[in-house]
Length: 234
Ligand code: APR
Image 1 (cartoon, rainbow, N blue to C red):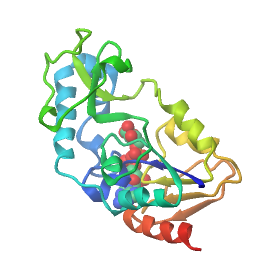
Image 2: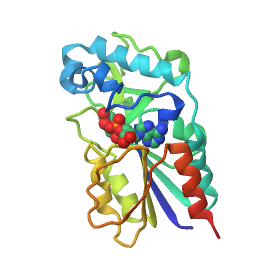
Image 3: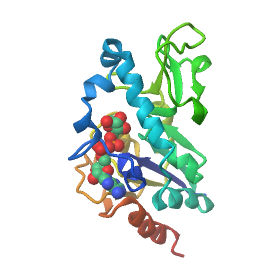
Image 4: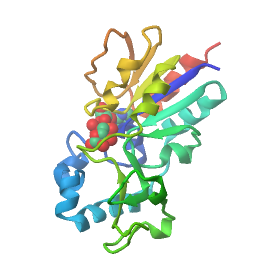
């Protein structure tokens, strides 16, 4: 089976009703990124940050995967698919994708404030526990914090993502403005023989590093319909 690696971003979930980050009406317009998505912001006001992610978790209960997520999951019938996502929602898994690397963490998990990546303290929350409060402690005695990679923090899953991207026979970029590194740099690890597709309704400026990119200028669901036809045409 050929290996298809997908790099997804916030636009993947836009049709499900999850806001993107950049551009008019994006999340970073409403919430200052340095307050809610940096270790300094968390140190200054942990309650505010915890509530911001409580709100994102509540939203998760109201949204569903869209046709784009479903079509990526369906491609597993024909390809060995790995999804490398920058998204913290769980819509790829709910659509049925089985191999997902969450580069920027997961909304449904919490971790220790002292050692965020220590697997002993990473906990998956049940939906009825989605409201984390100040005073909810990890077993190491620290406040439970959102299991999210904030700006300025290391991205521990990047090595695993690179290994996967290096082996891709087909690479797909979908719904990301390619503004945030190291995720945006993953294209540099794609073999020069590997076809690269990009699905986005808007123009995305990509440092293509010599790759010829097949651009499908459509929203995720429609773009995935087109790509599925292209990839599965016999
Ligand atoms: N279908 C596909 N793409 C879409 C859609 C849609 N329906 N709607 C918008 N887009 C595209 C936008 O044109 C844009 O290129 O999705 C992209 C969203 O870009 P960003 O908001 O910058 O999101 P992303 O690239 O995922 O951000 C990366 O930045 O703030 C951090 O940690 C956060 O993981 C996030 C990272």
